[in-house]
Amino acid sequence: MVRPASVAASAMTSGKQRGIRAMEVGGELLRHLADAGRPVSMAELSEAARLPLNQVFTYVVSLTRTGLVRRDTVTHRLEPGPLLLSLGLHAIALHPMIRLACDRATALAATTRFGVFVSLWADRGPTLVKYLSADTYVHTGLHVGSVMSLTQSSTGRLFAAYLPRERVAPFLDVEIDRHGGAARRKLSDEFDAMCADIRTQGLARTQGLPIPGVDSMSAPIFDGEGQLAVGITMFGRTGEIDIAFDGAPAHALRALQDASHAAVERRPAGSPEDRAVVF
Image 1 (cartoon, helix red, strand yellow):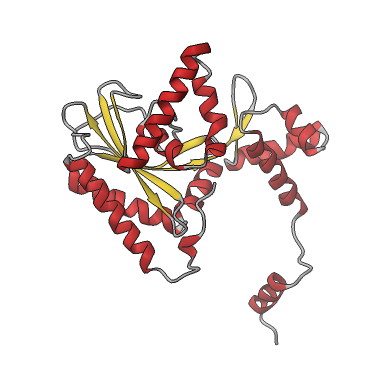
Image 2 (cartoon, rainbow, N blue to C red):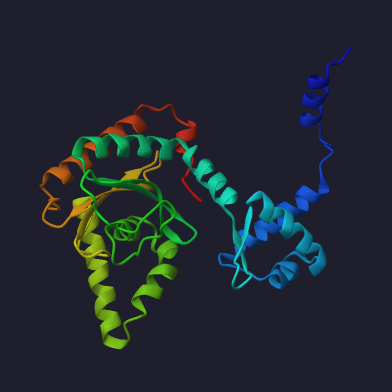
């Protein structure tokens, strides 16, 4: 007698699996919503998915009820819902490099008592995936999912310094283009020099930027291929955290880098941790 579990297992490995078409259509709608990178109208979603508007409406009702989609009560535009965001963060947290960075960030925050957060490069730029508050309250307005400025934050400057320029250029140009003419060229040259200095020091720092009264310092964590995987940022009140390159926070960040590098070096070649951190 074949047990039901065996039948299910056989079906999962079969080349012709039966599925639920409605779920596949719902998945396509979610994909179009994600690809848009902004809140969209139901008409836009209907056009992108090539589905009748009334059919899209019925799917949106169910997707909203489950929390996969959120519909703005004022604009009626659609955006990723809380369940979809939770699933995305869970998927990110499963990546070995992210787990390693988050564990070390937690230990760093406990040891130094400063605030610490972990960030990676996502579709909108440097994005926080873990946030640990300082022992002394520091108002930052930041949270998991916050996107950092490339020019005004130590986190953003770190990614701008270490990632290939073609990846950061579209985001960097938007920030620098706010300054026209000669001012833009001067700022661009100064930023390039700053990025070179970051690579020399191995750390990025800001004082009172992007949040007045808050200083920060960021360090890169590299994957098995020597590419920037995540950034670790320490922050605290101006005057309470030392952001000198020879200060205690800098030493703590460099020690974290060394420990992470040693962990990467100990891994066997081709291990899951060597997968690029791309989201």
